[in-house]
Length: 363
Ligand SMILES: Cc1ncc(COP(=O)(O)O)c(C=O)c1O
Image (cartoon, rainbow, N blue to C red):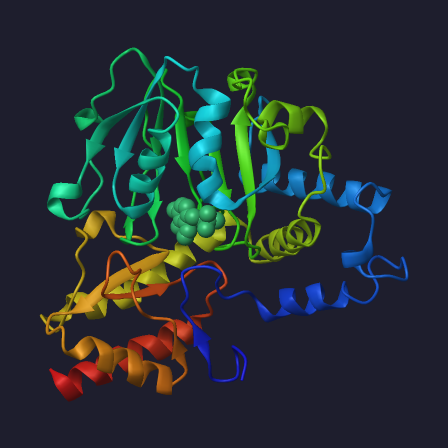
């Protein structure tokens, strides 16, 4: 069975993709652009692939209204690699970077950042169990902070920033992996945005980075050439073989997003889907959500049953009904329903109905 035939996938990434996009991707495997061979066999130096990269870069810029003074690049190694590559490219050896810790992934970014320089914890909600986003006024940001790193959507904890923070002159660096292209972004507030594409866009291992030009040119000499942002930009992402099929998938997903009306149309849709689940969670004491209402993620609904003994039964019964991959992240526990852009309304309706009936039977 595949999604759409009674199976719904709530995985946190890689995640559900639209069937029509998978179909278009499948077609490229036999004959890509009339070349007579597959995209998997096409040279990355060919005009066809160069044009695809240019179009995809432009699609990202258009979808998020990226101003001219920002560059868009495709990188490899997944989002975790950026935890090291950001300081290698943007943090001079003696400078200090600030980190806002709001959950598992920002903690990982901080831990890795500490290997490359002074990493200062600007704010953390660890003590309250990552239940909220601290207000910018609570962040300890001294004038010598070179940049401040945030994770606007914490995939494992279900915490999301309610708005793009304003840090004045301090460049904000954001790991937007699990919310990228789910909403409009005030790009000017950021020095750099990066996102692994395995949530809203499909491929694993691929990262899209949007970087303000004036931050380039500071890479440390030991930065690997293929991971040097400026060098990649100068060589139009052709310093080594790019993740060709992944970039093609991103292109198809950006076409699909445009067909849905772009981020301005998909965002309210995402809100409606997540609210349908939060409403059930809040109705009584059977389920709970550890995150304060105003900071709850619209992409990753993290919740649990108050009686922990119900959790395994919930997962087993859900799976038997075709509601797959609802276990929480291994570090956070509990349950999680990921509702990325491509999650169909029918999946949310099926899960909502299952949650209500489960509660009726065991509550
Ligand atoms: C917010 C966030 N950052 C980083 C990562 C790590 O991504 P990757 O596995 O591509 O390194 C994830 C993965 O789920 C994530 O959700």
